[in-house]
Length: 151
Image (tube, rainbow, N blue to C red; front, top):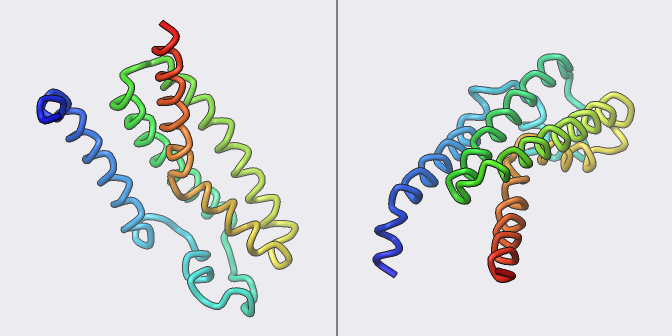
């Protein structure tokens, strides 16, 4: 066990660094990104009117945040699996999931914001938080175990 930790020490260090960067993005979200919905959803939003939003600025901010989280997540996948096929497939998944999430978010925001506050909240979570990495790591690990058990 100790030998395995010693052999994988660089992998562990890189993972810690990448996770710290994800935490820093979350910790400094108020400083780095434009997001009037942060304070809105932290309050009693069910009884409040929707805040005034600069849609273009919000779109660019969410896009940049999704991009940062995606790049860090892709590096995490590479550090864990050392497989460029997994990273390439994940890039495709991130592009598709990010596009669908952004389109859905802005569709709901522009047409159903007052009626669909919780829908907007959850779509927003998928965009601004690195949720997809939590799904991809176990999926790729399971696939790797299945492939190696068949050999």
